[in-house]
Length: 114
Image (tube, rainbow, N blue to C red):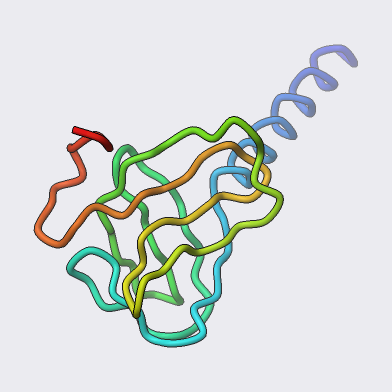
């Protein structure tokens, strides 16, 4: 019985860690355009679901089409790559994953480099 409870606790802990790792917090200091969406300044939780980045701020949720790239090294911090006031990419801290924002009007199904 104790082994079953221990296994259940460890499985719950593993799921908690896995779900926490799939969500990242970013802060936008000013309004920024991501794809064809306008994001207001503030703190967002960003989760990746398939080929979309889901930006959540309070009750507002915005889906942005993205593609993923793998880096050869882990990103130390979550950081934004911008040009003017347009979001180009997000480097996800603690991972080797970069989210590349698809251009306005794209569906997110495109692969980078094609």
